[in-house]
Image 1 (tube, rainbow, N blue to C red):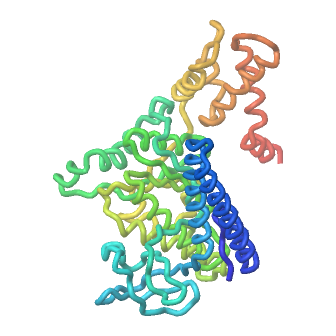
Image 2: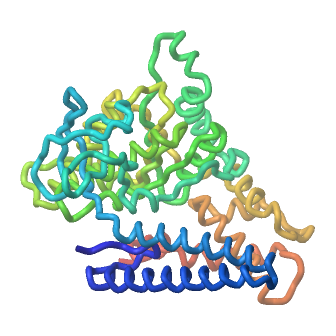
Length: 411
């Protein structure tokens, strides 16, 4: 038999016997000391000290006996309930393989015993003795989960039309569902943000979660692609299960095209597993209320690769385009990212916004950071216009997109 000690170490039978013998010897030593102190009380001495010492030893003896009982306790088997029967019985699927008809302990509530519940079984009788919390994949638990993101719409430059659409399709159904019920319409279940990298798609989703006080759950689509059959679909189920437990919540799946590409007749085993994951995602989208407390948002910069089944009404039926920022938006983004920076009086964002044509919000943030780094490198206290101009030249010349464009132009 193999057990686990309270500190997480694994114990076999020999270790358990050795540990039990050691605890037994300790109990005997404490008992002898107890008898000695009890004898001393008959001859006087420091009675108060001895009485307190006796109480301490009794408490230590009780704790050691409890520890010994825990070590001797037999292990439990983990199983899942498949079906509940009458007269306090249930059909369970144990971790050992076959299915069994077992009894349910009388002290367990019948409300907790339902199909799909994870339970602990007695090793000898296989009776259900404990209800366990549902198992969630560590990759799902390790997703970016923010109870309330600190990003607001004020941190986003431009994109006024896109923000208005997100408010209508995500915020209002979460904050005022009665409006939609009164009108007799269902808001979009899923919202897809489409646009080049660095244009603010993730920031829009976080700002919506901040405004609705919803839990923000972000997962990259490629993390749902697993090498074992059925693992990706299981992770999708657990993702939506966790979102319902943390409701109100917003699920944000970045790089959605990595699990939702168009299906092909001739596909490899890996392609078929990705398709299974996508089918589970479609099933979950069909399975919850559009005015419920869980909203789904996706993002991609390759919308042409998405399967048509994902974009039909009732799934990701609202597509919001997030373009590269215009000149006025670029100026606003400069102002946002320099709010906390010590700027010289000669800093003017108009020429900077003109020089950063075809730049994304991420590029402008990198320019502001680079300008600050140049100022620190030269030992100055404030950032001047020339620092921003040098930063523009450095960041945009090093941009991978511009390097590719130059290669295409001179090829």
